[in-house]
Amino acid sequence: MKREAISVFDMFKIGVGPSSSHTLGPWRAAQRFACTIRERGLLSKVSKLQVLLYGSLAKTGKGHGTDIAVMLGLSGADPVTFDTAIIAAAIEKIQMEKTLVLEGSHPLPFDPATDLVFLFTETLPYHPNALTFLVQTEDGGSMAETYYSIGGGFIQQEGETPGAAASVQLPFPVDHAGDLLHWCMKTGMSISEVVMENENTWRSEAETRSGVFHIWNVMKDCIYKGCHAQGILPGGLQVKRRANGLNKQLLKGRTYTDFEGWLQAIRAGGASFQYILDWVSCFALAVNEENASFGRVVTAPTNGAAGVIPAVLQYFVAFCDGYYEDKIITFLLTASEIGSIFKKGATISAAMGGCQAEIGVSSAMAAAGLTEVLGGTQRQVMMAAEIAMEHHLGLTCDPIAGLVQIPCIERNTMGAIKAITASQLALQSTPDYAKVSLDAVVKTMWDTAQDMNTKYKETADGGLAVNIPLSLPEC
Ligand code: SF4
Image (tube, rainbow, N blue to C red; front, side, top):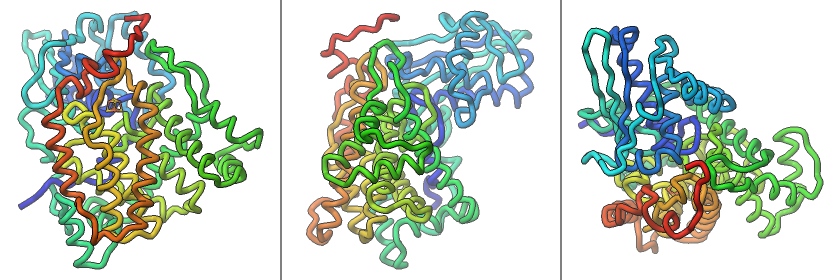
């Protein structure tokens, strides 16, 4: 039987903030729909286009940039390569001219105020993140397609089997942590080695290594950029960027001109507990401030939680003598496998499971990656992932004003620190005595997700979102 196969490049996707499920997923869905129109030879015949947004995409879509993502995707822009500095101008052009150039070649009338329809009270049964594209053609024809953004930038068209596109036969198929442990024990390979063997199904090892290292480079650029950007985050909450100020404060005037020099300047400040703690927070804040600003980030496994893994990896690079290509690749391969186990056994969508599915999963992934590169055994790696998730169980998603800013940005600092603590606990423990397995915590997370009240699943209808009286000037 073929089982769902998830690659490291499915778990880590290069894209644009602020949300994987509400920005990257809808962007990909819009690209795919536009591509379908072209393939059917209808591109030049489209006369009207509307997009219906349901459930969580309607309720927090404005704050999460769903409207922007859909328009850019329909225009043919790619989230991996599109220049994030011109997003605002591109959207303003569509709004001013009331024209959208479908797939970059067919201009058609499009007024975002009326052609993007936010159905706040309607939810489709399959998944809370749903969107439908409707087109009419000059000859009186019509076409409609519905897509679901199922978390972490993954999308699924209505009627499609989950994971069907990625269904290949891997040498070491893994659905559960127990499967992974079985392969490790049977072969003597580390977790990252098992993952690499599976990745070889899709491409050569050299390609995987270079692609994974590129993922790190995008993470690294994002941290560096976020630590050097100033100002107020977009969206209307007037949230001030903090990574820049913290970076300056911690460096105490030490100078540098590039990332390598910056790394030396960081290391020159010592290694006290407080100093390292502040830096881990700074790295996480930097990424999520970039994410909130529609910057280029790596979905890991989501955008709201995009700062946890880079912060822990940068901690390893800066403070654990970890600046080696091999180790960075090992970290990311192991982290991705843990993320895919959560995706298969539970969810990585906050609209399905609250923030435990985002920050909790990213923390478990980071804890696992860090434990392997610090020399932990396979069972210690899994123990670290289990500990990190165990202490995020029940975490709700209640972003103020639907923006991925409060509590999201600080929450990444918490996820990163918990990952480091979980890793240290596992490294200092004997897994034989562990009472909770990784599979048990995956199941518990999913049970908790199902019991969680809907208002805590990325709706901005509960928690901080209703108790903090912050209003948006432009709403
Ligand atoms: S509260 Fe957590 S899950 Fe919700 S948007 Fe923020 S980071 Fe994502």
